[in-house]
Amino acid sequence: MTQATAPTRATAVGMSHRQILEALSGLLLGMFVAILSSTVVSNALPRIITDLHGSQSAYTWVVTSTLLATTATTPIWGKLADLTSKKVLVQLALVVFVLGSVLAGQAQSTGELIACRVVQGVGAGGLTALAQVIMATMIAPRERGRYSGYLGAVMAVGTIGGPLIGGVIVDTDWLGWRWCFYVGVPFAVLALIVLQKTLHLPVVKRAVKIDWWGATLITAAVSMLLIWVTLAGDRYAWLSWQSGVLVVGAVLLGALAVRVESRASEPMIPPRLFRNRTITLAVVASIAVGVGMFGASVFLGQYFQISRGESPTMSGLMTLPMIGGLLIASTVVGRIITNTGRWKRYLVAGSALLTAGFALMGTMRADTPYWRLAVFMALIGLGLGMTMQNLVLAVQNTVGPHELGAASSVVAFFRSLGGAIGVSALGAILGHKVKDYLADGLAGLGIPASSSGSGGTLPNVHTLPAPIRAVVEAAYGHGAGDIFLAAAPFGLIALIAVLFIKEVPLRRHNGDPAATEVERASTDAPVLPTGVRG
Image (cartoon, rainbow, N blue to C red; front, side, top):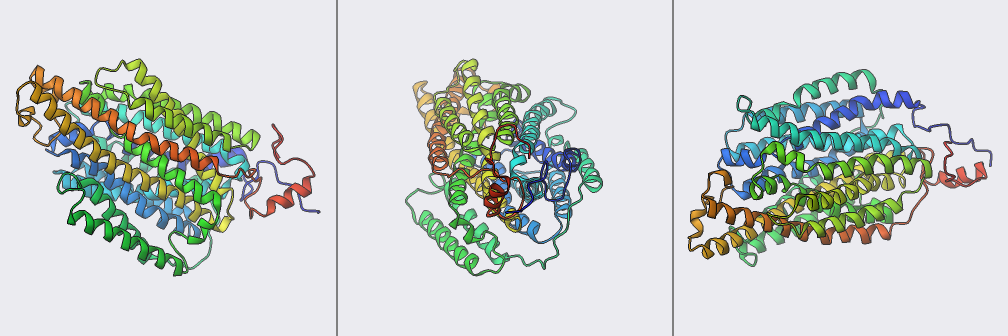
């Protein structure tokens, strides 16, 4: 073989490390906007829902609506990335996201807020999919772990800063919670300017043909499933004709979507990708990670504010151990993967830590010592840092350049889908458990359940009489523990899935995966020597 060896710091467009960082600056800033604007609401949400007189179901849907829109549009953005200008798409996603944020700040009811959050989700779907696709376009798999670490660090900073900023905004009388939706706008404008100056990628000249029927059917099937999970057991029984209609409808729409996708020339989710064992197992793991990551952690702010009576600002500070674990794991493990080319061991370790963290958090109550919760949250953060980005990396390493967008968005799609299902299902569990614990606790005091002051809405514990407040705090604390316990099996599913993924050495180029064998023969040396940079 006379094939040339891989270039130093191999990239698809021949860029140096400095050029990559310059090009990624606007992209990372855009991701920061998306993360910040999403997490800034987390600790403010209990106050927002209370002010808008919303219920636990509304609390769940404010989060779920964004995840659903992100889930439904991620494959569309990913497919467009394979067909047209990635730079224009990421700028468009930023504009849509900012529009949704501004409209959300004007909402006068939970219904309006949920609708505006859908618009935010459309933009977030683009930023989520395109960040991974653009990185994969510029950077070879072997080097991608290093830069994925930077992405993980930005996500961690946004996740840390969001709740803290949101808490300060809510606790500042002259600002108010509506500024939680405005705070990301200046960053988004700056990201647009930086992207225009620094991101220069070759545009693929292909006719754009989007599978709108497939996208519509997939969205409808997922929406119907989420409506069932959210409302069953509350508005109607789990075993009722309403449940039957929604479940059968979701299954039929899902089956029709599969049929349409298998016949479409440019499917949203190409069925052929699932013939790849790595992609299939990564999708299973991504669903499980999404259920746990979004489904359980999204209620932490509610736990700290209602069960422990903390302020929104303090609630943000108290989640720092989880974010710190995510930051450390994503940056350190990303560099190690770049140096060694080995990634499976970190997926396995991360899934194990995630499972353990969820199971241990299942023991928490309103009076659990904080230091113990901090350790458990750190385990979850470490697990997320080792799994999220590396599942995408494993998938990107198995496909050619023409399928990077579709393959990356498939993982993001199913992770968001798992998150949407997780928020809906675990939110429903939390609502039912709290209702039962409240009834039992108030009955012990000889007080009717309606005297709790909640009336189906989220209570403000600071305004409740001491005996009732103690019952409410205990009920929400126990309920929060229950949803983390319910999330633990999903961590175990992710662990089992990644155990069966076959580790393929990371390529030093962005060509077809089959070229790896050519590269091995041409170098006449092991593909993964520690410390070799190509």
